[in-house]
Length: 358
Image 1 (tube, rainbow, N blue to C red):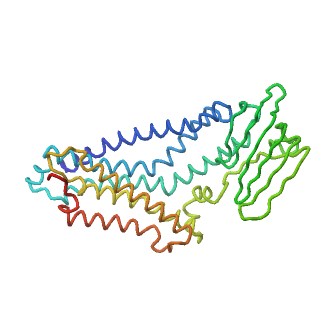
Image 2 (tube, helix red, strand yellow):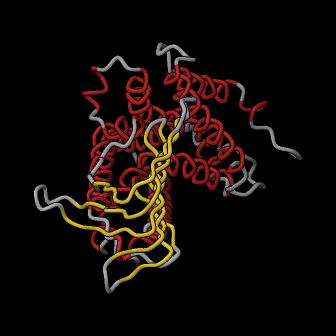
């Protein structure tokens, strides 16, 4: 038990520290992402903080298992460097005994990752899109800056005004491009004003003296309409396309669905906790090194393995969604590859983990 606690402490301490640093960096990155909207008054400070926290909750599904995996490699690599592993093996401690505390730690992290993947991440996506949609529905045209492009609807709508008259609460020479499925709509007007519909209470953009251009990506003929006055409602749209709807769907709804996109997302959520365990276990034989090598000796190999795993997982998910790959085994063959790699590292460590100059 003393050995178990010692190894678990060596793994957990850097995992918590590194994960905290990554969360802080990610939070700062997301803050810069919302900075323009916050400075223009489109998002309040409280809303920005809530959106950042929701994005962090979403990112933790990937950050936690990644951090654990790399910290297992580094922590055990440090034990090899300081000859502590040599001493443990000399005292009769087997490699299986080293696996035990790593497995305990990985199981605990896997439970957290499962909660994130199956419940918290879908909820966070739902809240994120709902808050963003409501904020965009309350978009204030007069808070825009002259000659600045603004994106709403997650980049599906772009708004630009050459001049903003804050006294008259209107803009001049305004351009709006909106994408919806296979349709592209562009509006250019000399003037625009934002009003509230007294009947519905919704925000409406009223354009004066302009043109409406409509195009189709399916090859259908577009059209151009000249107008003296036209209106566009600013209504909340939480799910702008299939991609966002699937991410925010409950795990139970995905389990009952027969759509390929839903099946791929469901398999992704189930496979993430299993991958957390497999990656942590792979870190044990991967960390083997000579004492003359540093504790970071195998970190490059570990990063390459994770990069290949993550990109293959994302690619396989796309293949399942598009019908290129059958849902059975679907994403699960990536987990089989991880399990196979673990067995190879265990049975042939000398060949797989050989270092130059050894």
